[in-house]
Amino acid sequence: MPGGRLTQQERQQIGLGLADGLPYAEIARRLDRPTSTVTREVMRNGGPTAYRADLAHRATERRTHQRRQSAEPRGRQTLAQPHGRDAEAVREYEEVFAAVLMQSGLSNKMMSRVLVCLYTTDSGSLTAAELVQRLQVSPASISKAITFLESQGLVRRERDERRRERYIVDDDVWYQSMMASARATAQLVETARQGVGVLGVDSPAAVRLENIARFLDFVNEGITRSAEQAREVLYANAKPEADPDEE
Figure (cartoon, rainbow, N blue to C red):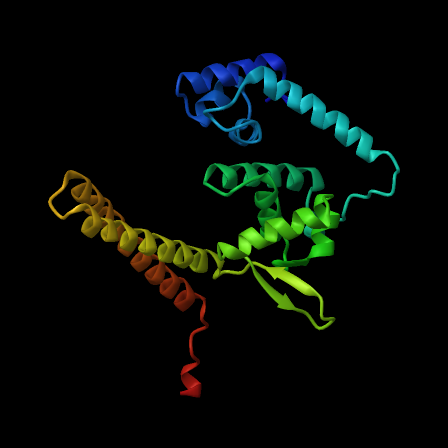
């Protein structure tokens, strides 16, 4: 199996494979590359619908040049990785994860990077200063990203023993986020039904709004119920079984 970076010709083959609707595994097989290599290449360069071989090649050359520059001693150090992790593999994985989050609807790249940084930290929490150090961005960028993520229920804030504000993700974060989304959808349902009365119950516009409300209400109810059931099951499975000798 060949190693090293993808060539421009291989990127062109990836682009052709995507245009033909081939799955990542089949494209990887034709290139004799790991599927993860193709997945990472596509997701870090716009995703399957926006991937362009020439742009991806230039972007990779640019990133390589930037890494070489940052490797020069200028007071910017690579953070040590725990558990024997490969720092380069972690960095590349974080790029892919951030790209997937963006495709799933997260607002922008900085917010995705902040969230991924928190997810991939063993403690699940970082201060603003730690995020600035890890992502090499301004405090203002971190503050803006955190404000949005918190509004979506994706992170929460706490004060640690040193009175520093920490931003935290935990096992409950996606449940809380889905509940926040459900509340927003419920508001949309209510607003659509208000329009029915304004436009006249029997009018085509009112019928359209009522259909929107019914659809969203039905879907929202199912998502909420599934989220609550999943939370109960996962939390129940995480609880240690009682010792019969203690009963």
